[in-house]
Length: 431
Image 1 (tube, rainbow, N blue to C red):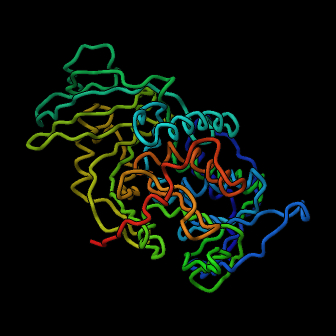
Image 2: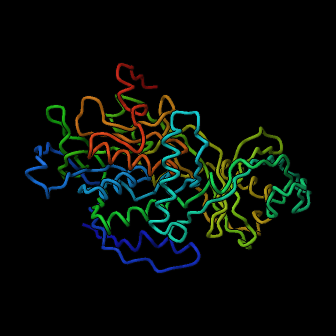
Image 3: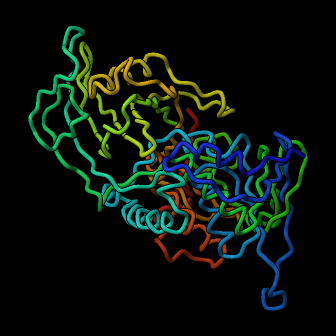
């Protein structure tokens, strides 16, 4: 068995200023990569006869949804094992923008989930020292139109005199509009948030982290009892939560019930020479490139001095290994053009390119997350399909699933509209 120090999970947090020492956490015991696990049937327990026994729950998936679920399960007293096949927050949960909005999902099926989760992010930040450990902060959000200039255009040629536009946004802009305030929009560094939450779950609540690939579930008499990992290890459990993100569609048992695909999204991370000039304003752009169609990239300055730029989505097959995901060169090049068009601080020579990356967002057939107990399989739960709102909706999803698993129903949010039972009777046709 390999032993990975929890300090290594926190090392990235030193990117945030002010730099602080982090509490020493107990070592995380990790099995060798690619483990085979079989979940066998657990014997039912009478809580009245065994008051000190803990419900054993295996959570499969080390992204934001799985980690939030493991955190709240363990906080409520469950004995939790988290299984991740690669590394924690290695995919979309580590490469997303981390933007949070209170009311941007209003009028849609995730309105209540988003509102509950936005408020839960705020309380978690207070509990976990979010501003220092993972860059939580409220910020103003703007909608701006930007037109790409020719190569001969002078640097810093702001075309709008509107005071709404921050001084560092000095490219050819027009039509600024405030679409979010510090009361309704905020941000986190998603990878740091996910790993901070997991480190807390390990230190305070005893969550065990296992690196290994889920192979199958063992089901007897319509109840899941345990899971099987790829190299033969069996982890017995009373309940299993499958939070596999875009890899849900590659797990045969779930793929036969409903569809979850991956939408490839690209991003870059820049480090400007003068980070102090960049104010906390999230930018939602209508970008008009020379010789191309308008697009809608997004720009998020972070409190550690980085500037995150994302956009350029594409439909591609999700690879088996998240570590194999790389960005398409043309998409990365376009995001660099966006950056230099927005601000002279983000142009080549004024900002270092820290990361060029891509990830897959989990999308369902009907555009609504799938959260709940799998029909016909007692003790097996699924939580996936949050698309671009996974970081926002992770906390409330995790808290609700924890309630559902341990108490039989969720009170933080009504999960009925997200139930996988809505797909019963629909025929799955693989394209």
